Image: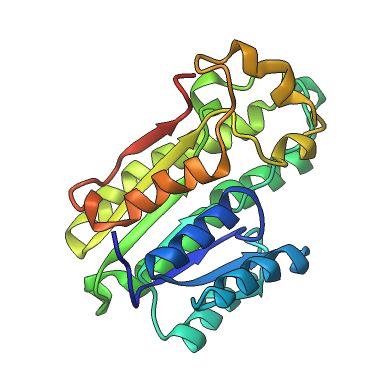
Length: 251
């Protein structure tokens, strides 16, 4: 699964699943660019670890909720690495638990702008660089979905669940759109994964409360999700496109 000389962009690569993807990709030979919004320290720590191990990486500030920031990120990748072979649309936002009747329009719009529109705009820029139609050499895109797209997120975050349902539809549609242009587009759909996202949703103890009810009696890890993403990026998945791979421990 060597990717020596290839370039990967990971949005939201400073923590959680994104950081695990960046580290595993670097070990596989990718040159890695990763984005962060405001927490430069953790993102730089990932970069330093990669460079310290002999890899190539850099971090760039950019909010995928902003088209101008997205364009600046891709321009930075062009300047630094001179091309792009793979994109992992990992960046996303999650709000505190709430029923729909307690959610305002501003929250809904932010969820959709970052999780859906941001992923679509990043994919658009990746296609412009990777598609053989545009003179590229092909590549791979992996989008981050969630099992909540199937479960629905009732009484928790139906807006977030809807955004991930949109990612599933987008993954299938774009995969078919660019299949003949050398680009594969897939998604991973994590279940209960032990990352800080639960604290961000106001439920820092959620893993401890629910893992006993999970089929495997434990939450997954960021590294386990990252391994699935690296598989989908690799030539081992050369005939796989439009797939949504559940990494959910049977949930």
